[in-house]
Image 1 (spheres, one colour):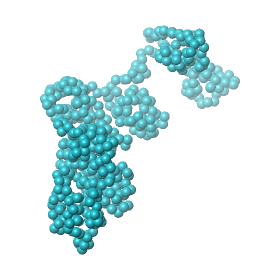
Image 2 (cartoon, rainbow, N blue to C red):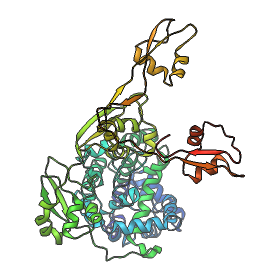
Image 3 (tube, helix red, strand yellow):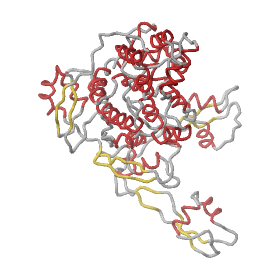
Image 4 (cartoon, helix red, strand yellow):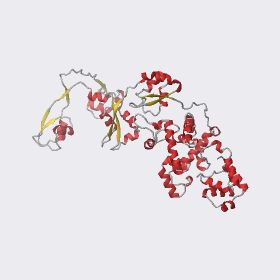
Length: 523
């Protein structure tokens, strides 16, 4: 029903029209027309007066005509299919997007022009207003890889549980929250469900932001379904609906608000190729002659530039290059970087570095597989599940620890405890640690005179195995007036600590003193 029909209904049957407007749950627009009669009509709608005598007693035909012209312009339906109103909250966000936030809004709207037609079709197919596409604009600026501080991901900002609940696949290889089409289909299902619960787009949008339970609690507390009266909602949620309305108003007529929009942007189009083997997107892009980033962008749900192994996958390619991609698919097979994955639960004293070293992988790989930020890495909690990839090839840490072919045999030494000695004095004498002493002798802190202790010694090379001795060039430096340890360490690209250890000195040096410069990797 358009606004022209609404006017006719008002003029012929005031009562039925007011009851229809009451069901819309949207506040009337604030405008320059603020006569006493206008305020009365707004209050009638808001308070849902249902008695015909009460309505007719407060109506004036001339004032009613002005009221309808103000709040129901003829071209409203041609511009919006979402219930749009003007009030202080909406005007605040219009001022922000055309002021301080103009650059961000311009960039987000320009980026969104590529995806808006596809997203709008999906929303309208599900019976939703097409203008809800701008919900993705205020959520993410239409960015695929964006992640919030609450771990919401993708253009529609789904958290993991909600995304999986609406059919999105999320694992170590794929995150469909980052796919603009699949994520929009899931968002449409979610919005339909929320609208069925609240029977109001304003309340449904608020629930999309903060969750249905919080909106329901606010409704029960305030005893109203009028979104604009739910003052106990979080400020972010109270700003969410007017922010969306402001975005819709600006996006539908950007030139009038000073935005430059290129209408010739190509829409998001692709063809699909089915494969059941892992394909390397970088190799495929090279074979078909496009930039690897372009192919990765089309397949933005992939966490790596490799299609998931062991299952069928639809690769997205530019439509004009589909035949070429099919012909070159066999030449782009991927070598998997991992044999598989295992689950590890964080223990007390663990760090991501220790976990990576223990399993022969890298910290950056663990962060990528588990989608961890630097902030989360610093705050690993005990019991947290970490997915650890098992690499096909040992990395440099594993090679250093396991792949060294030089054999070593321990030199066994025994010490007899004398009166007055303890583990600390013995460990210092033999340049070892108390922990090593206790482990080697399987003892506690208690020892007694005459007791024989095995001293865990440094390792020596087995002479039966060939070994190429590393030669080190010994460098020295003579201190000149004005120099200090800091300036010398910077000159030779070493550290003050290494200089002091190599020369067995404190912080004091004097001109003419000769210092040994430690070579890299020795101290």
